[in-house]
Amino acid sequence: KGASSPVSSCPRPPNLQMQAIRGILACGSKDDISTTAPQSSAPLVKPAVLLVIQGDNYDWPMLMKDVRLQDGRPIQVYQTMWDSMEAHVSTYSSAQRCVEISKLAASASTPPGCAAIRFPLTIQPDFVLVRNEVKTPNFDGRSRLDALIFADLPSANSLESILLFCEKPAVAGQLQRLQRRLGPEAFPVIPQHFASSHRALMYGYTFPAVVKVGSAHAGAGKMQIKDHHQMSDFRSVLQMMPGEHCTVEPFVTGSGDLRIQKIGTNYRAFLRVGISGDWKTNTCTAIMDKIEVTERYKLWADEASKMFGGLDILTVDAIVEEGTGKEYILEVNGTSSGLHPDCAEEDNGHIRELVLERMNSALC
Image (cartoon, rainbow, N blue to C red):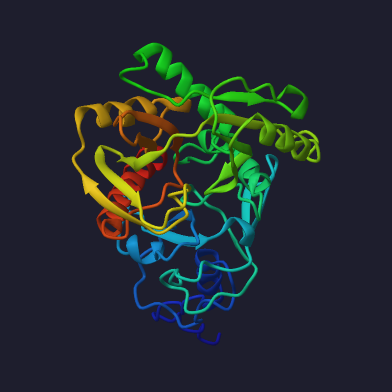
């Protein structure tokens, strides 16, 4: 009988196709990876995916570079905007949650390991950081937020609180509750009138006043009313917006605006003074200086952080009345609160540590 063929002692060559597929799963696109076999035979660790929604001039993939969860997993960061993403969620599918990104934020780096990204890019986020308003005068991203809530994704702040912050009356109601519990001296909220439509607009407090239509944002949708004659004119304008509500509050001539910021356990306080003469100091030229975080301001931030089940990132805005020095709390902002340019690097570091802590708690 002929001799049997000898069995080779050489190891089986690596399956390049399977390695390429693993790379695609890690980066989200077949064009992102090279088909060159990796040098290490160690098993690939699937990274945790962090979705950051922020179009401002910050680079979250770089801010989270080399950061790992406590179980050793790397964190892959994708940064985009509300109007550059869509989402779909299936409770019956193994894919479950998919976010389709049409473009990354202009300031964001390409995630490590992905030399190039082909759009639309589909990712499956494990955690979400929201740093921009969901609803603005130019775009309403609540349908995208609804999808993330439906997927039950953990986030900072909670997605449910972010949804409630889309409605200013919900925030104002929480402030009134805090004032009733703490008293108007300790927690002085500006008096307000809410009207569900033009028919219900029966403001009977002092003039001049400020009207805010709907969930007014960053100075848009706000108007100063000098007397009841102008209020009557405004009522006719509101009539042209069926179903829209408004709030009215007394106009306070301010010597400056206060902003109390809380990120995790870190506090800051600022005083902003307008120098252009515009009564909307948040939209005009102004000087903003850091001031001492007094126990009074710390109380405001701590109590506001209990709203909607707890807020990790927030700011409290108030106005200081000219002549009297009285302080009135105007509103609370949530996770989309902006940062002072001089403090942004340090404060983004605080947010990074906060996100890592929350991701470890939720995913490990």
